[in-house]
Image (cartoon, rainbow, N blue to C red; front, side, top):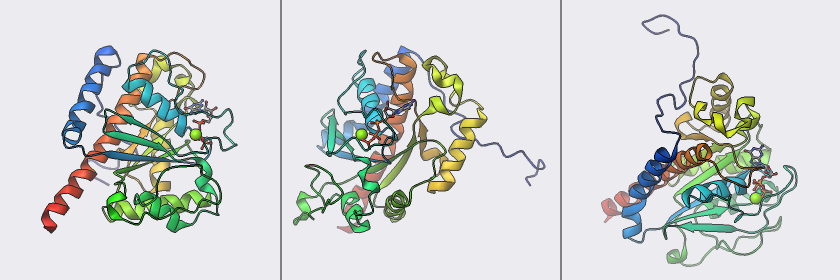
Length: 283
Ligand SMILES: Nc1nc2c(ncn2[C@@H]2O[C@H](COP(=O)(O)OP(=O)(O)OP(=O)(O)O)[C@@H](O)[C@H]2O)c(=O)[nH]1
Ligand SMILES: [Mg+2]
């Protein structure tokens, strides 16, 4: 109960986001993103981002959407192979794409739900001690890189989930490894919820995407539920509608993908600034 009496439990997720849902807005977002990574690019400081999530949640589709938007392509990227089903694990390799010689996004296949992959393997992956090459299978035995110089700094883990899903037990394990690394200040974490079009019918068409930050109860509830399920604050959550049937991009989707990318990179850049400051203080 506040001084103004009891308030209804309205969720304020991203309510104050102001973006232009047109070409000007897309160009402005891309400009902000480039400004944000410029100091890292100039110092040849790589920003490595791992994208985790259950099979079929839309990781590869998300990465294609980000790629399409960053490159301002009119044809939707098919760089990351997308499955036709949400049940069968499709991506079997570590696949990655580097942008602006600085930001690398790694598509971590859904097979990480397998109970055969041990928690310490996941920790090794998140800490960049595993070479991201070759096929991923249930018997993945990450070989720890011997020398520290060969390790990749992972700046941010992006968890990708479908709205309302209960986490499978093995995914909970990944989340708790990631969360505890984030809690120790070792890594940033951002959650992307896909399938916006299945949360509210109005998002079946990208034309309505500009309403995503409005007071939409279904969206607010979804964010709230995922936030408490995963233990991630709402400001570290983005919602997207991936291209799933479209072969041509549209400006509304571009704006939402770029806004999501900006939030992911903001988390990654702040993580790297923290790491750099710590290293300087330790000297
Ligand atoms: N309606 C809708 N379908 C989506 C969305 N995102 C992905 N899909 C569909 O879901 C299916 C699986 O998508 P992928 O991107 O291959 O999923 P993934 O997470 O990479 O799956 P794995 O590689 O198997 O781990 C495909 O048929 C996509 O078209 C979305 O936002 N909305
Ligand atoms: Mg995939």
